Image (tube, rainbow, N blue to C red; front, side, top):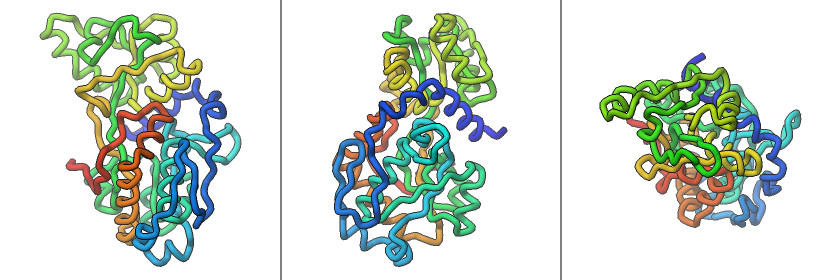
Length: 315
């Protein structure tokens, strides 16, 4: 399994305990019909901006929709409202509905396996994809990105943070849980030399097959923290036991998480006008506070960007 797919499996497993609370956490927002005068997303009413709509390519205007690929589940970005049913929810879905409302078209989401998303866009099956896709130079060769979040690894602790973990340095000399074969395990291993040099002792790394197993160890006090993707950590902290089981460590020096990288909406290079329209619509939603409310709904406000950039990855 490649690293990116491993991260998706890791995050999905991490949020398994939270999935039973989806109905309670949702706000009942439905996908907007194309041309709706206004749509409510995360408690915000969004109206069509005619000037932004006019930027769309003619084929999108005619269709009244943007065909969007997404790999489900990958909490909190994409989830099913109810297991076994097709209705979608999640950060990407909500953001897509907000963008669609602003542009005056529907963002129509269709599940697609992650490793097939970019080829499907190239083949013309989809216009775009919203699936927490890491923006990198290799992918930029075949799709364009409008970057909407910046995220890396985060630290999950027990409710109340009894060990007062404030950052990665606070994990030195402590028992810490992590899923095997992930970027987060590599991150912990890379900190060992610094821990030893500081005289704090190396991190006692406890590996688990799944993030949900690591969370059980954290619940029982066998470890003081768990390291996983920050979006997954934020979602689990917000939803597990109605937010009473875990806390997310917020390190001001790494607001998006450790080793953070940009995530973007992938868009067909055949539709440059769509890329331009989405970038401007996203910036409008950032400026009016809608993006912050959507991200806050899923416990990951700190990974939101303040500027809608295009193809921001530099490596």
